[in-house]
Length: 80
Image 1 (spheres, rainbow, N blue to C red):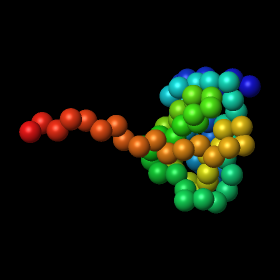
Image 2 (tube, helix red, strand yellow):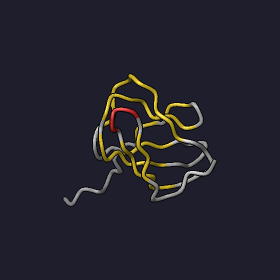
Image 3 (tube, one colour):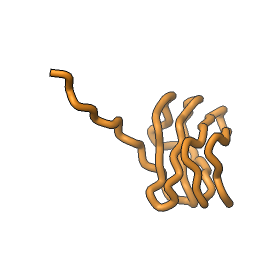
Image 4 (cartoon, rainbow, N blue to C red):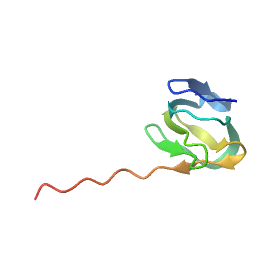
């Protein structure tokens, strides 16, 4: 199943994410884990799917059954 960019997904507990980069995989959530925080981005390297958390909750995002990784903020050059 394809996941399209711009799609809003909602999971148990009111958790919501927006797909920022789509791909050919399905996103799901399992209870537990560290929980999701607003504004954090998660990605799946295999499918290329990326999502942005818009409503937090105590779940773990998964893409085709594999946990999605938290994206690290991009580093910018300092303005010395």
